[in-house]
Image 1 (cartoon, helix red, strand yellow):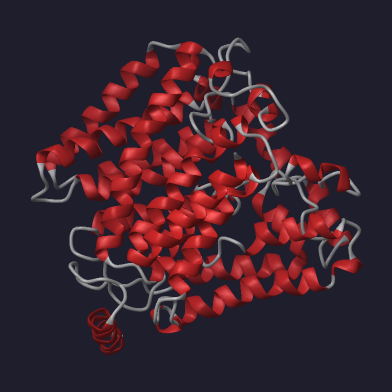
Image 2: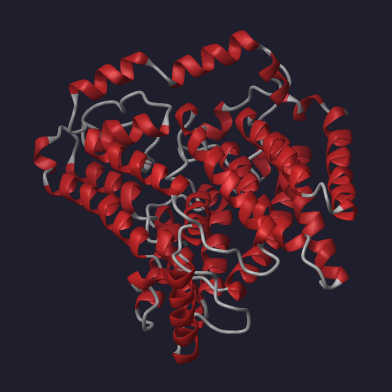
Length: 454
């Protein structure tokens, strides 16, 4: 069954990716949302690649279109992508220098470079693509909430059988004084559920507050925002709850001059707060009040021993060698050494790619912050502001956790929006496709206008 699902994911992303970038992204996101629960119930080696093949179908569908990933979309970004991909490939070519098995290093190479082309896809998106992605996320969030509520009331066993794939889910029973599990909905684990819900909020809010929208669609996005907020507390992740509070504060600030939307946003917050306050299982985030615990948690992530390890392995210990890189269970027997401890995304990069790889990523983050961002498309200004804030928060908190660059499907969505923020020209006007002669003329005019403005 795994091979059938994998081939279907590839065929669908190829077909719809040829139709438009937004349609292809919709298929990839759908595969990512259901990857965890499908893999848990169809546990074979083929199901591990279901999401990868959906991504591959999208890549191939866009590469076969003229100028779909042209460097002119974002010249500086393209240079960074080449560097971030090139160095891990060099390391993979020198695999004999590192202790890990070659197959493990190839899995590590996948984690290091596989999602980076989403940066270029995001840079080539048009307004219609953004709208389709936002609508897809709204529907998927509601579906995920239905599964989450089912797991909450009926128990995880009805949805996730206990096996090697779901072992992590069943180890996370630290909710309500260790009497309940964190809720993963349809994802690999509860942390993935929460992180994806947070990543969708800028998209959902951007679309929800647009003028002249049909009432039914506005209700859809309003419910999807509520689903995302409830999902953060159902997954019982403290870090995602903290990010939600920060994004909510920023949203209130951005909406301060738009009273009707501000009142609606406050209504969402009050409704979610009422639900959360009545159930101890949704209140794991309250442990953030324990300052001593928070300090210890940060000390675990920002561990001085990690710096010593990086000094011991200046070129890295080999791709796939650090904690946080997803190694499939059927390859665990090939691990020549235990994963090096690094519950810290920057440390994971440094331990696997060495000081060169870590320097490249830190340089990219700095460039992204100081890079002159293009003018946002009509009605997407608030969305771009929230996306940029979310990007800064994500990179800023990456030192206290792993998964930012290897999450399913969070990483694809995260890098896609970074590509949007890092392009060299304003987004093409709505009503045109991202390929074809008319779209190419629009892109050319937009590039010239951006150059004249600078």
